[in-house]
Image (tube, rainbow, N blue to C red):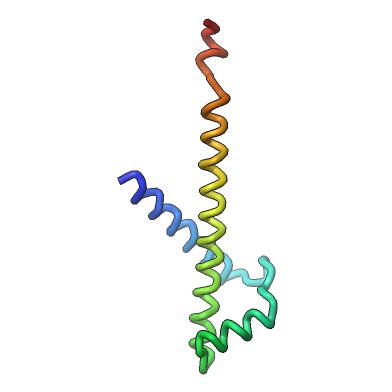
Amino acid sequence: MKTFFCLLGMLLIALGITAFWARHPNLLPAPPATFVLWLGERYGAENGEQVADLELLLMFGLSLGLVWILALSLCRLMSRWKSRWKPFELCFPI
């Protein structure tokens, strides 16, 4: 159950980042034009609506990757802090 809520939280955070990025596209760097053209050809975008769908998919994929990297880094950091930091030894030395 804990894993489910963790994954749900990651998806919601990624959706939030995607919504922010879609509303403010100039705040974050744009992908290279050659990559965008290649991706559009592979996706088979024929009109503006399909290009917009592809743009949202790209934003969501990058946001999900960013959230996953941040979550992995946080878990790694917490495990290192947990092994080194012993709060009871500070308050009650043995």
